[in-house]
Length: 483
Image (cartoon, rainbow, N blue to C red; front, top):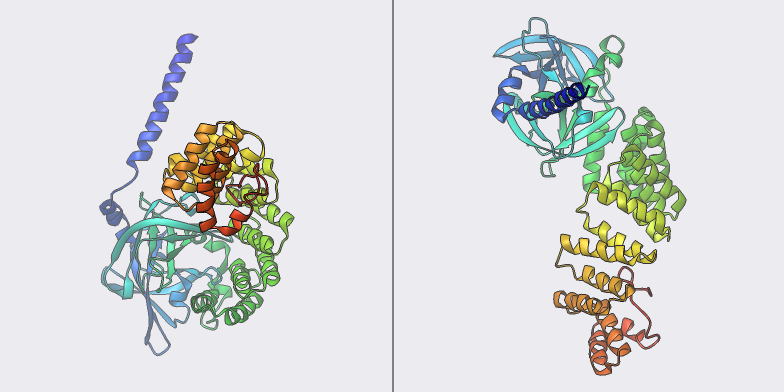
């Protein structure tokens, strides 16, 4: 029996090793990815009813060798659609359309191309290497690499923001992971922003047959797609023309009431224009469409905070962390709200979640030190500030807070040394001067105490006025209030 258990255990270890090895070898080199996916990229040309070229874009061969997916805006005004592959032209017809998501598929009889392997955008992580491929301006296949820089939540998936350079005409091309699997369709970029490129998630490609088909939708008669609104809204945002953006987004929400993005941009425009209550209502409409959008709950939390609705702010942030338990930014926002409303135990638990996810989050270690101090846990307070200094040994503020922590723990020599170190880094730090002056005065070294008081008076007369009110007074390292 022991032998059998040992054998099973050994097999488990070997299997785990094989899985790890397999995961490492599946990542292909850039050259391998290019060779794999370049056979699946086509040029798409749109012509009007006079056979005049309207637009040129890119497309990706999927599923069958004669099915091509691209952005809807590439062909939205076309009377005739042509696919160019290996220097041959093929007439194409619309197969499936999703105008709201700006994606469609084409049927291309006679096209005998290699279809791509489909990946999943939902499993991609920020920082992952990705490759973009397409035919900018319809000439010359281009291939570039970059990383995923942001995942922007939207209904049914995430917009993928990535740094791989793309140019006009790359819309409808492909975004691939390190295994050469399609994870997104590059759709637009902000020309004035550096490498601010986006791709639609591959899940929308998979979902196309379940959406609107060409049999019930005449794309020639419908020229104002949701993507038009999005491009116009982006242009207005760049100009900071919030009134115009509000008017545009109001029309957008009426035409596409189920569009989460329209409500989000309406909320952002109202917020930027100073109408926070209307911004809140717009964002609430957005989360009614998709309650699993973490970013929208975070935006709502921010707005609730600005309008003094603390309970709703906490609720919004708690919804955000429930959606993604491992997103440090949401936990940090929640911790700050708890801290500022004197809910120290709750703030402590939220802060611990931040450093669990990101042990290098300097600001959170500073918050933790403050919270431990307010809860009377002085040894933990010292440890938190020492951790902050481990991350940044040149932080005068961390040394000031450490000095206060040592004071709380009655470790006087270490307290003074921490304040002196703060002044070595920042000679005009008023809180360090204030506390050192008090320390020396309380221990009978009045001349030295007055020396630091004089320096404080020259730097910050307002704080100096408080000096003789109470010799037991200590400056809070976070707010400057009594601690």
